[in-house]
Length: 168
Ligand code: MG
Image 1 (cartoon, rainbow, N blue to C red):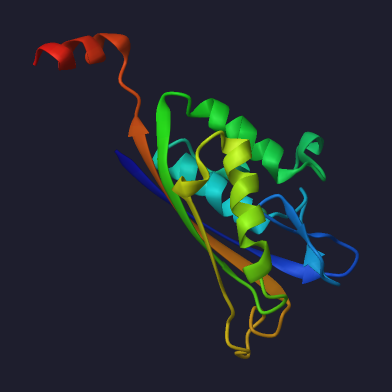
Image 2: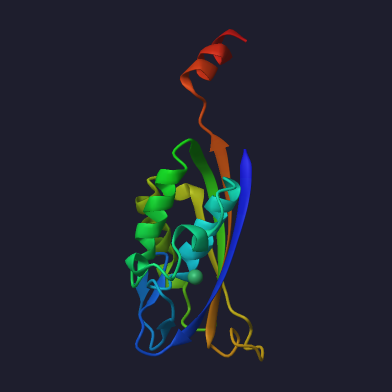
């Protein structure tokens, strides 16, 4: 088993879509960023890469590389899943911290969207939403969004290990 954590923050600006877990949330502001700015997916990608000790999102998808400009973060998540094909994702737990809008009505769609992209059952994915209680920082005043993620990976046994297990 291996555990990983991820954290990300993006500014909220005009003329950008608010993408959370691959779902477009109706709002007058969206995440700034080189890709589509999907803060939740960036935190999940970093947690997966961290658990596998494979670096971070910036080393795999550098903003200096034009290939990743405006790319859907779900595509980055798909590419990262290919890099951890020796591992099974046991579960993912996440928190999104956002003043507005309320994410409650979108949580189910967000979990489904992540499950479909990662090709894992939706009951392994948890998405929680909190506000910053209107505190006087950039998240509390609605100018930024934060996401945190924890991921547990389990090594997929090789065929020879499975064979040994039967006889031990
Ligand atoms: Mg990011």
